[in-house]
Image (cartoon, rainbow, N blue to C red; front, side, top):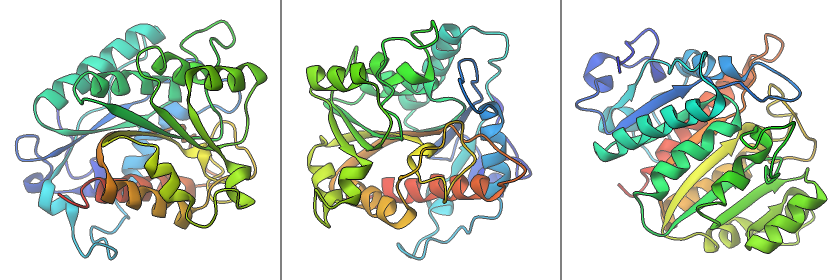
Length: 296
């Protein structure tokens, strides 16, 4: 695929730091929007994340480094999924992800609705032994199907559980009874947002989450995991969500204690009324990269 230049790529990087050959990190934009059920607009998420990223600082003060210049970040042109059904779209995302993992790249996928995440997760599952999945979200997404589709955004983790049940969920605060029963049957560990808020896991709950994960970790981050007061531009905002610093602490601990092998960030639904959400998501992507490479 063609790589994007300085005017459109992540962080606005010049060719020296964004060319495919010399970059250790590859960003795939997957503007999938086929099964959204409330707020719409996730297909515009990737391009708005990239646009907003041009205002994110290269320097990470927490780690005293400029990761983008050390590792190189290649942003590929957006996948064309418009004429494809959901299953075909997932197949295409899977093949692209697998290709770049096999080429030795660290792969980041930008969405798009959450249904896309089963594809990069499967590609990583097949290539990294004993993989666990950290699922940050307001919703557990464990329905067998939703609105007639087994590939719905509300069913993505049920699809993942068909090949990997080593799932740890954080921030959940909207779930059906069937989903609750499903997670118990499959042994999926869930740290509900309210349980975190009322102190059920103490002040070091992030450490407890990390302990549930294996050495290799894939992160799927639905931005509605954040409280809507922080990030309102998402399809189904749920009150009582996670805030920035506590989430960054979680990601940092995982980066230090485990090996983050890849991640996706999904469900940004850009709104002209909430442009800050685009920037916060772009900042999130770069922070996650910094934490993924904290020991590398």
